[in-house]
Structures are given as C-alpha cells and as structure tokens.
Length: 291
Image (cartoon, helix red, strand yellow):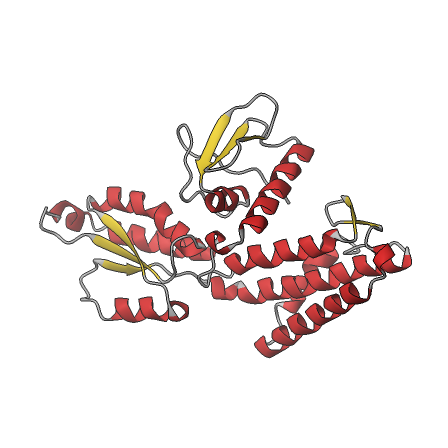
C-alpha cells in the first residue's frame, strides 16, 4: 500500500499543475508510464490502474511502455536518459521491502508442511501452525534476517521437506492431515499445496514472473482450488467464469455475472492479483477472498 500511495500522490502532484494540463495541445507528446517488467505483473497492474485517472487529470494521452529486463534496470536506465520534461514517468514500487517477508513465508511454509508430513508418518496430530498469531510472528521475525540468512532458511527448509517426502512410507501418503484452513486432506495434497505456494509467490515477488508463465495444469488446478474455496464459504455465488477455450464455470447454481478472459488472466483475477485482460458486463467485480 505504501508504494501505491507514493505513486498516486506523485501523479496527483503532477496533475495538480493545472496550467500544464490546460496548456496541452494536439502536438504535445503523450505521457509515458514506463514499467520495468513485462505485462501481467503487479507493477504493470498498478500502471494500468492509474492510466485512465492520469489521462483525465492531465487532459493528455497516457501510454504504458513495458521495458522488462535486467531485474528492472533497463527501464531505470531508459527513464534516466529521457529529457527532463515530465513526459516520462517510471512506475516502480517498494516491493523490495516485501521480499524478506515473502521469502520468510515460503521458508516457514515448508516447515509447516514438514509438520503435516510428521503427522502423516506417525499418526500424531501436528498442526501446520500452533495458531495464526504464531504464523504471523514467525514470518515477521524471519523477515528481519539478512539476505544470506534468508537464503539459508529457504534452502534448508526446502531440503527438509524434500527429505520427508522422499522417505514417507508409501502406505502413509493417504493418511489424513489438516490444512491451516481446517480442511482434511491426504498427505499427498502437501505436494500440490507447496506447488501452488511457490508459483503464486513467484509472481508476488514482482520480478517479471506472471501467471502466463504457469503450466496449464497448474492454472487449471489453481482455479479449481479457488472456486472450491468460494463454494465452501458461500462466496461468489453470483459469478460465472468464462475461460477462453474451456467450459464455463458457474460458482453458484443460478449463474450470474460473467468474468471473461484467457485462463492465466482469469486465474490471476480469481487469486486476487488484479483484473488484467479480463472483462465482464460492466465493471469487473473484485474476486472474493479464497484463503
């Protein structure tokens, strides 16, 4: 939120120069929002969200220019070389502040799945987390580690989880365990739980990964997970998902408001990562919370 507020306030300051907005002419160059990553990521979604309000404020065409590469450095270098005339704006974020939390979360998620594997192996109930507060505190404390310590945390916990998967007796893969959301699932479900976690947070790192990079089987499984979660919670019952090239999915029994688009875009929207390249009859609704 801090990065979004920073960019919106900055653009508002630009727009507040009402005399400049009034002085725009047909020959004026368009405003350019330069995004340091390919289309589909979080920063790209932010740029598209502010594009129309900025056009209205300035009375000028605003275009989005995605210049991905070199971890965002290409866009930074490009903008630095442009004339200082206010027509080129770099849309960046403070996501780097979130990186430690994401990496710590992924590391401790592996630890939590190790607990479920211990439950499956021994039959002794071992929850993923003793409490929601414990989980939040663990991530918060992990985020204070140095970059080297965070990498070590991630590598070590992944190795632990891999060892537990490899050594679990074949007869115990069907053993029931319980997720942090309270669902009872077989131990084999932990493989998908980890897969889902890693793919989604690869996008959240906002370093160029996007839902279009996901294999179709991951996208399809993720959408099925999300719709299943909505149905269990009684949410989104008035939504109908119209995925290009696939069967329509009605969340409830009576049909309702459509959300249309290619599979990666619909999954991105459903996962709460922004309405990019999806449409509806009117404004695209916010996706219900699924986790």
